[in-house]
Structure formats: C-alpha cells, structure tokens
Length: 250
Image (tube, rainbow, N blue to C red):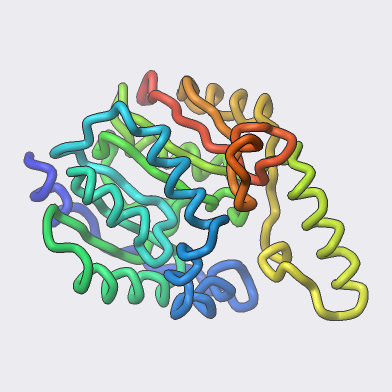
C-alpha cells in the first residue's frame, strides 16, 4: 500500500483518558501560543538538532510518525523533506492547532493529525519507516510502554529520532533547583517541571533503547539556546537527541 493510502486508511482515533491537572491538560492550555515558542533560540535548536541528525537521510515517499506533534512544527518540517506524516498528540487542543496551522502552511506532501496516546498507538505493526518523538517521554506515566509501542509500529531498519531530558545537564539541574525554590513560595517556575517526571543520562537511555530493539548510532546534547562552542556537550545541553535503527520487530 502506498504511504498516502496508509495514512488515509490507518487508524481510527482512540479515546483519551481524563487528564485533569496532568500533562495533557497543561499542554492543552499552551496550545494557542505553542507555535510562537519556535521563534526562541531554545526551540529553534530543536529543529536544528533534528535537521543535523537526518541531514544524510532521504525521506522522500517515506511514512513517518510524529509522536507528540504539538502544534505540528516538526511534522511540517518532515513534510518539507519529502516525507508523508501522521502527527499525533494526547492534547486535543494541540491537534486542533496543528490542523489549523497545516491548512495555512502545508502545500505539498501528505499530512494528517489526530489525537492518540503514545502508550497505546492506534496503528498496525510495522507501519512506519520512521518515528520522531520530541520531548515527550519525560511526561509519560511509563516510558517503557511508549518505547514498546514505538518499536511495534516502526519497520525493521526504520529510524527513530527521539529527544529526552538530559540528567547530566547543569542547565537542567539549575532549572530543577529553581522549580523547588519557587514551589516553596507557591509560584513554581518553570511550570512544565510540575509534569516532567523522567530524565536520563546518555548511557541510561542508550541502554533503554537497546532493551527495546533499537541500536543508537548518533547522540547529541542540545537546547538552552546554546552558543556554537557549547553545542553537543553533555554537561550543558538540557536535552539529548538520539538517532537509532530498529533492529527487530517482535
């Protein structure tokens, strides 16, 4: 089946569990302004990091899943590289924003958005040539179940691009300390730290990927609006990006 037909025929939307006060509700509240985040250096560094990881990859006519698509910025970037893309997010308002923005900005390729849970993906086995997952696992109840699902829907030999918080980052450490101090006076900042449950070192997450049938072949630290000479240094970048190949499908 052609990728475009796979997108059209694939999957029905799955009902989301109630998330009052949780990360889904939190991101729903941010949906209307989320796209403007990509005007900041910190968010632009995400695009640059993903571009660097896929620079040598031909995405034309490949079917990709953007798991945790937010307002669809990276989904549209994949389409611009020639991929056909399904973007999913657990936050319904994010998906509405992604659809509205795509109607304005996407004029080629095939792009669909839907509400879905990354821990229970509504897709057939071995459907996607690649999966992009940007800063999602930190909010998940169970990162293992999410990686199980990603491993199930990606083809053998497929590419996973995934970013997670960097446990070794001095910047992340500073943000966590700021969150604890501001929480003591009842005004926790940064607010997303209330929902950020997981962080990983490079060795920890590499081992986790291998446990789920992926072999990482590229890793870099990024984020925090890094100057050029600091990019890639594990102790500074508050996010880690991994590119990994799917070796087997169970």
